[in-house]
Image (cartoon, rainbow, N blue to C red; front, side, top):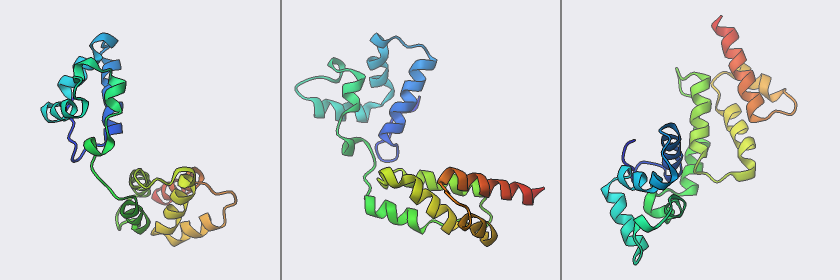
Length: 162
């Protein structure tokens, strides 16, 4: 498991990967914290020491460590700037529809769309597609959600490929 890099790694994703690592290696709960403090790296360990004074990271649980201030362990971003990047995203020339969909989901992670996520993903997918015929099909589809839009766009792409 690689060290956590606060400048480029997402804290939540890193903890999920760590939990997967622990499960795959059948690490007992009693050793989980010590393992985490070793794999996370020296820079992050020192930062945890600063945050937790007068306590020590070794006296906490993994759950308590996960609650460390977000701004100290994830790249800083502006919700507005992230939303702007998301809303400007269009399918690039030569980019397959599946990669475009994946990139939209990735860009939406830091936008805080919450209850509107499905709608904005659907709208950005339809608006950003290069193929106007696929757009017309999606415009005419009743009760269109992101999943249904993805399925239709992928099916059309597969038909054209064959």
